[in-house]
Length: 617
Image 1: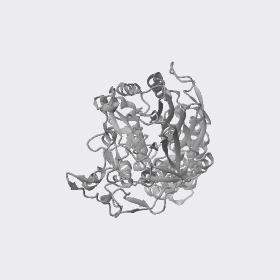
Image 2: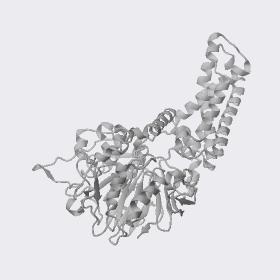
Image 3: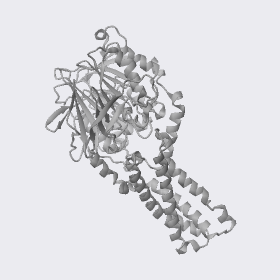
Image 4: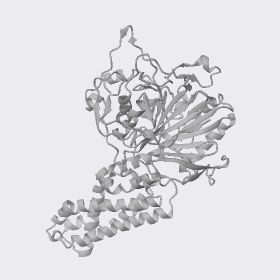
């Protein structure tokens, strides 16, 4: 980051908020402090008009969208089915699974300050924003960041002021965490949306919990960016948290607890101790919002143990105080979905920028905790009904059919991989069919047919249920996976039959191989890609490879985030905000005021409610 950007980043945020709930100073309190009011210290700071007696120079605004001007690179969406990325991400996932316990920095956080936080409201209450799964391509990420940074959104005739708090719910970067990835895919876009605060105003607070992608480097880059340090800001947002988890006291007897589950792992002892000390301030009238890194209530349908950590946390930390967990919120799955129970709402809202995940295969009813959990002391099971989703089931199903066009366009490397596979299959089949022995060079470079058939079948079978995906492997995974492999072998047999009827195979060696690479490979790759698209569409109807069906498309539209409002009387209203279309054309605004976005959309961005507001009391 350039020095000018660093200077700009340390100026706090926007005063153009038309909200009656203008942000007051958030505060931090030492956990376990006997008197919270006496020990509170400022976590944010006002934006002074002067420093050291001299007027501060205005921050330098970018003159163009060039990376040298912005200080970061606007990244394209991640091509999730690119072969090298699949291999690299798979290795990182396996390493995280095998060595996660050795890389777990949560135990070390016991030496960091143990702070509780307080976010006061005003006479008009408090506004809180929630966004998750945001660190993907620039267009989608910045479209959401831009809307979050606006002083006010006019949604269906209702004015919704910007949150005095912004909560990031995990996966702030893709595909894997690093300092540069955070700069390009998270901090840079959000700083561009809200560079600084207007003079004399408080910065809104930003809290973040890590998701599985944040953990791929052992949480190193996450802690450097979000855990309070010398640079305690992301653009106009201040970052007061001191660990990868946090507890924030809100108005109206509400509390926000953000837990770090380390990719579905146990909750570490320092974290439990921290929340147990926070729980001493809870009482029977307290209401809790629990932010988790993944919607384990949905994942528990296939992985009954997925919900165990949250259930343990609620039973051991919250329930003994008499407080009620009224709302669970999470990202990780890239859509909006709400399950409603008699006294609790379970909301997934992972629409901050990553590719869309389908909603048409969501279970209509879930049991939480699941009845077949292995936990011997689980809470009583309760039923939750699917009460809202975005996009709608019909629109999600229509998106599925886009796989035929988007898969080859979004993932050219995937087609190259399939083209290479089918070229090798064809050469192996052609050699076995014609029984040509050839010279020693030709025999040296011949492709064993049995090996290629095994590679194809096993590759397709494991593609149906990758080892890193978790959950149970059912018979449908094997049947569909092997069927997919057989379909590719049949396609290769047809391609071999056609190729042998062309003159190229009769040429002097190695010309047939060269011709196959130049002519057969690209065509076979395109046809095989469409065959894979057909498989994904069919398998998706059976709940198999749903993630790959949509990851392969990389759909940037249909984004979402939450805007929450705590009324002065203590009622919590949830506004699920939907963004049907993201912007793809941008312009720099070099002459705007310091607190205005660096980048503006060429066409207005519009937002609406994904469903009517939900009120909890």
